[in-house]
Length: 216
Image (cartoon, rainbow, N blue to C red; front, side):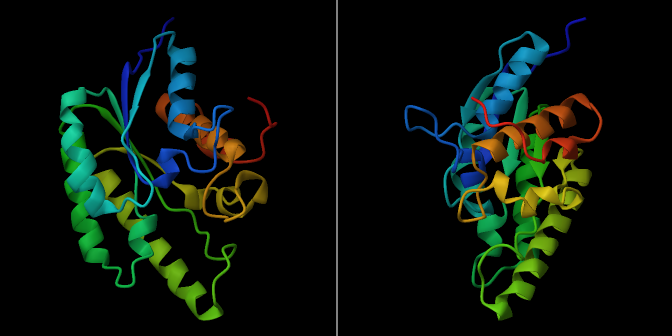
């Protein structure tokens, strides 16, 4: 039996969704969002067309100001939002401001009637090179932001991929570029597969965030 499809997929967010670390043969970024669109097209037998609005360096305010206004006109069936890593890197990170901004984003996205995907921030504090005094600060901020993402996702009934429940997501070097912040092609493939399982409810999404055979 044919599964329902998502013909129009709009992706918002930062460098994770912009595809940093996953270059195709033509030198352009591929990224997990385009890979997810391909998986959904295959699994539903209905074409999933991606519009990727994500840009490197985006924070919550940037997504609100420059990406969100374009969403309604695209009439999406599926929307993804990955944001927060650039917020926690700010010198003065405000959990209250992040909560308010993310709430505005998710309220507006949920109001479109589309299925909305989000994800928490992986705990990279132990693997990214940081001065010792900043490791505790980084982990606290990553945990705070992820708690906010979980809570706001539950409030607006979005589907949230919880990377804190996936130890390999932050610690397996096979999934990351040399900066240990951005997934490589293998990591983007794994993330796309995990999001696909989340959408279809096919068991544990975390099983995909482990090394996969290198293939394109």
